[in-house]
Amino acid sequence: MNKLALLCRAGFEKEVAGEITDKAADLGIFGFANLKEQSGFVIFECYQPNEADRLAQELKLTELIFVRQMFVVGELLQNLPEKDRISPIIEVYQAINPILSSDIVVETPDTNEAKELLTFCRKFTVPLRTALKKQGWLGAKESSKNSVSLHILFIGSGKCYVGYAYNHNRSPFLMGIPRLKFPADAPSRSTLKLEEAILSFIPTNDEKKRLNEQMIGVDLGACPGGWTYQLVKRGLFVYAVDHGKMAESLHDTGRIEHCSEDGFKFQPPKRKQIDWLVCDMVEQPMRIAKLIAKWLVNGWCRETIFNLKLPMKKRYQEVKLCLNYLEEELTKQGFWFNIQAKHLYHDREEITVHIAVMGQK
Ligand SMILES: C[S@@+](CC[C@H](N)C(=O)[O-])C[C@H]1O[C@@H](n2cnc3c(N)ncnc32)[C@H](O)[C@@H]1O
Image (cartoon, rainbow, N blue to C red; front, side):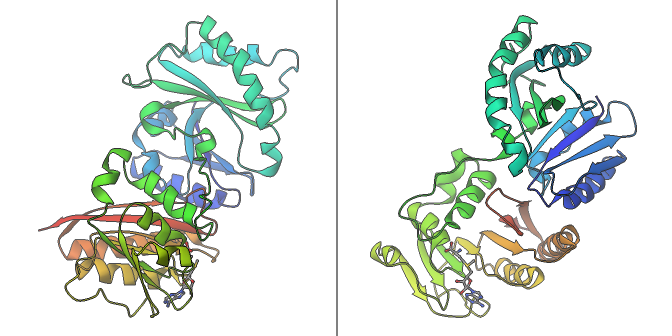
């Protein structure tokens, strides 16, 4: 097994190919990215033996922007016999004897055609799990060092990749997609973007410390209020900046002030220390990156989540330019900071970025 399967939103395969090729090369690992447009996955074939395994351990999934899930796989298994799909899969695993495996996950790429297979995947998991246990596998604790989860990716009926992912470096969600429920009282569906961002970027144990009633937020491009809703729900007071109209339900909370202003000109009200800046304005990505850098460098906020809209062709290149710019600006000012970027499930032609400033030299 010397390939990596990388799951993504359909239509972003080229971004994944560019990103995995770059980031593997940073670790001295070279290979070839095989992709089919709109397939929702990429297979990265490493040139040297055992390197896919090294990538699965060392290349942090949280640092891959366009990848939702990552696991090591072997050759594509084809023409699995309808009467016994399990034996060929067991045979593949026998070659690696996965005694440190904790569970089995059977998934598909996130495309309409592949998703039709999901019911099959769910049903197939049950007898497969029993068969794997019989082999003495799936007994490991998820938390034990170097433990893995076995992953099977069905890309058609009778066609699948068989492999494994390290438990310390995989998404806990099926297909890397968190299932979030739309809150009935939220003003817009984009509320789910900020909810997923908070879930992805802020460890659950830290959430109360990082987002609470003592804090003030600014939401640039706030209307009708889906993002503001998430901050208010966590207790923050929010300056909602937009020429549009905010949902009445948010005014009723008494926890917002609507500022009908240009988000590029807005400055924090005097004597108010803003903790959080969020921004969902539809604008050129570099213009947003410069605005965010201005807020952080001026010390107007400590932590931020914002979207970079990517309607252009060379999306990965554009993202690199913006992230490099932000890193350089913050480094020049002697900031210690943490930056994460992810193409979230609820993002379409955009990515979400989180920056937390921890201090300054
Ligand atoms: C995608 S919507 C934001 C949706 C919002 N995050 C929500 O969850 O409801 C983008 C918003 O940005 C606002 N916007 C665009 N350019 C702006 C600017 N220069 N200043 C303030 N708001 C702006 C638009 O009026 C629009 O309401």
